Image (cartoon, rainbow, N blue to C red; front, side, top):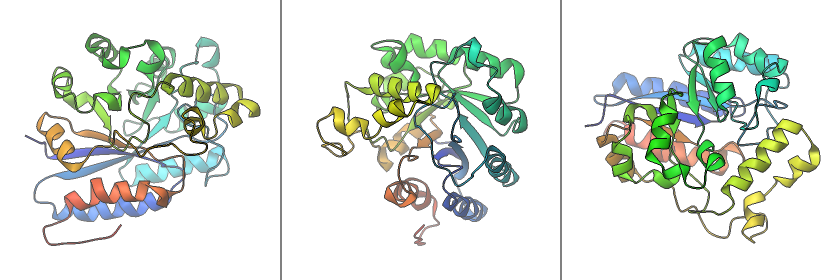
Length: 296
C-alpha cells in the first residue's frame, strides 16, 4: 500500500521562482490532507560549474554564486531540501579541489540537502568530507558505464551499496518485477521523460553535455544545442512526442510496490513550456481535497 508521504524532486530550484508558490500551496494542501502528504525537494545547478551534468547552465535568476546560495538557504528555511546536480561523469581526483563547486558544498552542508553524482570519485569525496548530504546516483550513470547497465539488476544493487538513492532509467519505470527486487524506498523514478524510447544517442548526448561543462569550451557548449532533434533528423525538435512519460495510473501502481520518490525534469525551457503542466497533473491534482479544483 502507498505510504503516508510521497516525495517529489522538482527541476529548477535556482531558476524558477514560481516553485516557491508551489511550496506554499503544498504546505496548505498538507494541512488538510486526510491521507497522503507531499514532501517537495528541488534540484538545480549554478552556471560555470565544472562538476555540472545533464544540462549546460548558462542562465540563472541568481547572478552570482552568493546569490544562488541564498536561494538554497531560502528553500531550506521553508523546510525543503536542495540537490546540487554535480553529475558530471568526467570528475576525477584532480578535479575535487574546484573552489567554485566546493563553495556550495561547504556553505549548504546540512541533512536537508543532497548531491546528485555520476562519478564514484565525487560520491566518495562528498561522503567523506560532507557526510550530512544525501548522495543520489544520477539517471545518466548507467548509460555511461555499460551497454545494458541501465537494466542490470546486480549493477543497481551495487550502486545502492555506495549511493543513498538511485534514479532508475525511465526505460525501467514500468518493469515492476525489476523494481520489486530493489529497496523501493531508495529508488527514484523520472516521471515526465521527454526523450525517445530506446534512443541510440543517449550516451553520446550525456558525454557531450558533460564534456562541455567540464571544459567550458563554447564550441563544445554550442554542439549540445538541440542535440536530440538534430541526431534524430528533426532539426530543433524531436520528430515524435515523448514516449516514456508516466500517467497517474502508473504512479499509483508504483506506489503500491512501495515506490515513494518521483522526479520531474524541466530545466531546459521556460517554466510554462511543460514543467508547470507536469506539476499540475502529477502533484497538485491528485492531492487536492475531493471536490476542489485549482489551477496552479
